[in-house]
Length: 95
Length: 493
Image (cartoon, rainbow over all chains, first blue to last red; front, top):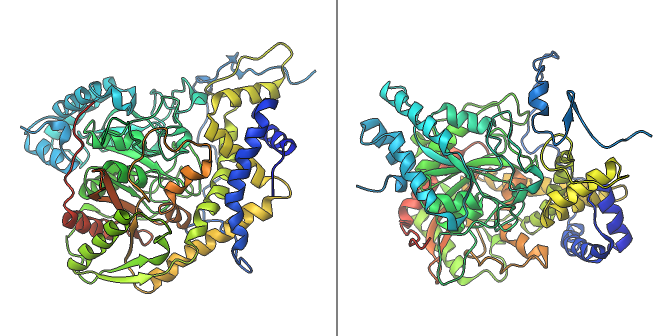
């Protein structure tokens, strides 16, 4: 499997990372180096093996479904790059 | 009198209780050594004001006779732990200026036990790396040196390792996703333990790969690792993968007696091209354990060679999901956007500016292996291989093996800039001996046992059964005593 420039462009866009056109060939090359390494996994016989979901066999704990937290608007907004009137502010998303 | 910053946790604890010195004395000694060690670039955020207050409070507790083991002991904290009101940016520009409104469970527990935080420690960005070179602060430097080159302290917990080795703090916190505690410990002649997955809460630890990440102590001795791990470990309702198990008195489990323990030597770790001095270190370690009364047996872990490739599917996949939160909206850096730019432009520019090259690479690899059409071929296959890797260990432990002995790293510390990153896989190979444990969720500890031909520290790794860190620490202590590693880096900084 070899990654071409179009695939590199598509992956960068899916990952929401801006990669300029002239940087795409090097990125594709990076991907190919790592994927070439990962490719070894195809040698392993995984017939009938369950994919791991949890490394330690444990049931996730349950708790009562109730409000235990909240009313921390100021703290939540404290680190925001742009907070206005109690909200996170972002560029216009609706025309 | 010995410089107080060079003390072990155990010696400092005992000295505090006897009234030989105060926590404020200890803290000032460490702060002085930190201020003279700028060249190591280990401490990246100064929290000395908080440290002095914590030391004063600890001295009051000690005077009142209410002193848990960690009370008054000055430590460094890896920049990956959220610390309330203090900079926390996991060595990333994307978290520039971030000061959490909350405290991680690990630091809460340590502070509750009276520990003093001297400052935040350098690391690879988002804990991705094996040399501390992927850091917005620039690389941390190993206090060990053999010529005029600056050497890496390893990574990702490179600042933690450098700080402990250079006696800037008595101990430090680290995190380990593929070897990030054990490899830096080996490169700096210090001790580092990655506990069983679920032993330490991940709440408030900036996430890299959640199914692999685990916090642990980095210390000067095995006894210190036992003392500090006990203070860090325990169930936390805020981390659903945290184990609801009692935390034993790890220090009390260090008895010095390992008679009858069965130690496995995995043949698959004798990889092609393993340097003679690493092979010899390993053989010597096995002989030391045998001389101490353990039985040494050969074991097989047949899927070992597939651990690194499986890791480089699973960890990036989880990272691509975990790091989706850095979008320039809620915290950290936001790129300046142009007129007419929409929200996607804002996300893309923010993430391109905020993440370093290796982090971007891993996010995108993860995005690729999770994307439609490749999920089964890569991600699901890697998770199946992970099941097989864990089964390998279970089969070995089922034969009565108590711990497995292997090298921690395939080499001693290398120079800054020597593993260039042109081929990312070259750097990944540093974790060839450590990454298997993360995939299997097992505890592992690196103990310094010798010096390389050039005079750099080398470490051996012991791998234990799940939840049996106490037994593992006892065996590690025996190895430490037999090896008698006492070398320290000469001060040049």
